[in-house]
Length: 111
Image (cartoon, rainbow, N blue to C red; front, side, top):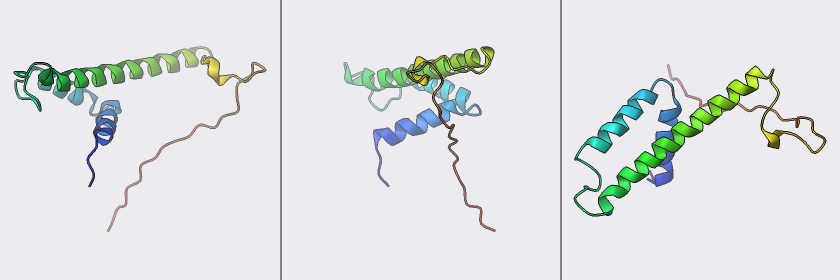
């Protein structure tokens, strides 16, 4: 199994976007930032703060993105379903013909 930062980022992001695990991830992140135990101890100048800075940046960017998405969806629902994103209109000013996609994770259940 390959380990990469992209895999770790996607795992953290998926947990943060799941409503059932969101608060656990936020609390766990705050505990990690407060805890003296780190991947790179804070005793080392600059190197000790890198993991904390990356984790704070990741948490804040994901929370802000989720807030922006929620606000956009709420304003779209209030305007009667008309898109507010200017990129969703064609050159004639009418909404583009797009199909919504649904991502589904499948699980095999064995008897």
